[in-house]
Length: 621
Ligand SMILES: Nc1ncnc2c1ncn2[C@@H]1O[C@H](COP(=O)(O)OP(=O)(O)OP(=O)(O)O)[C@@H](O)[C@H]1O
Image (cartoon, rainbow, N blue to C red; front, side, top):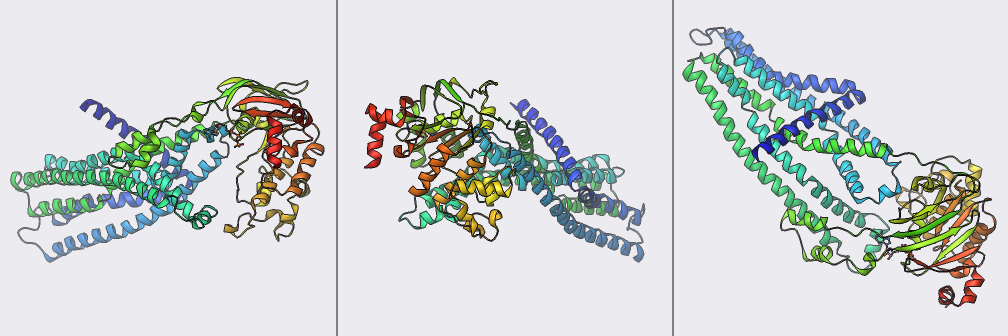
């Protein structure tokens, strides 16, 4: 058990050294002058204790101040002590400013790298809860831990340097006392290492609670959620849930603080024993000159003052080490993603015996909450202990097979929860089926099979489309390939040109009233999302309820454009709850409980008097 702890502590120290090296190399690349300045100022401060000891002994000479102290020598000692204090005070201030000048741009660089790498994340990865946790944890850790790692390393290396130099300065007086004084800082480092280990164990939990709290605060801060909350009687339990998160976080910090308090007491005791032992040796055993004892005392007091930040820096270095490693692994994962390939020319769709079941939430949260102790409440118990519902246990898609011809337009229809969106996402390569295969056959050419290649062939407009508040140009042309004329054409086909036409900045108008930009209605947002698909070069368009929020006149015109005016060879799948707009579809596929219930043209299905004709009838009532 003890052996295991030693191995893990040595391993942690090795990791700390490696990560300190990585981040220092980064710092040297990104801000070379500041990094060198940081090291220089730190080493200067840390050299002060031993310099003072040497200088006092040099000024007082071998006899010390005892006997016949001249005013000159006393004055020189006082001057040295004053100079030392001034150098330390000034260097502290300078060092902390240099640290800011280094840490802030490093944080910006690490954030930029992560944001750039995130641009290549795959849809499957966006649905991976573990990966999402890793991304959020990295984002949380960058400003306070990862960006600070190199400067913490400087402080820790400086402290070790300081204590070695202090020991060396007292070596000639008494080597054992010198070693004891040099070692006096070790208990503080051990205590901080233990704090760091606890901190890094609790970090994932802390991250989870703080993200939940941040989400709940954001719900109150940002429209439209904040407006919906304000307009509704009741608070949706937001303050209570936020309170639970705050209390859980405070419980974690309490554990860390109590352990830190115990560690501080023990390390102070150990320091007193080591330093006291050293002084006893110097005074009692060596009968050293008063000046030597005074030099040792000054050295130790100065060392205590210059290394007072070392405990914190060492603790932060140790607790940040797993975060730096996690950040690098995350970057490796994200930057290994291949770019989405492009597919040109018509594609069909072939789905064979596809079954898909959404993963059921596990019991992680409950286990985590229990670990904190006393933070579970009835509500969270109810959530985590409830049995999976029937809906969750049932596959969303059950042995589905279908085929769509290149260049045709097809509709998926069915009741809520029947599996339409899931099937569309599987075809688009966003989800991978548990069983069965999906491919996009290309006439006379190779078939597109892999999820990434399917993704590259598809432009999808989601049912819960995102209101991404960027500029109009960025929203409808995400990879910036189109000319202004093409963009206006796409906007016009989606009946969105009038929204933008009056804007002073035109295509570069900012979207989102909260940024001083255009405030759009739900239908207007949806038209812009459609414009993006109309502008895309992909041969397969999947439109999940593309006109749900669009008025009837524009809806009819958009469907006419889709059926008659889409680019040659473009295959379209439309998901809709409005059967009457599907009159001109080449085929309608009716889905029920994850299976295909019936297929045919509008007229054939109405004539069948099956599920579609019932849906059509109900929608007109
Ligand atoms: N992210 C998810 N996690 C777990 N289950 C899900 C998820 N999304 C959908 N489901 C379940 O899968 C089933 C099919 O959902 P899907 O969204 O494909 O239905 P839909 O036909 O598109 O419904 P709607 O018409 O309401 O949009 C439903 O039972 C739903 O509860």
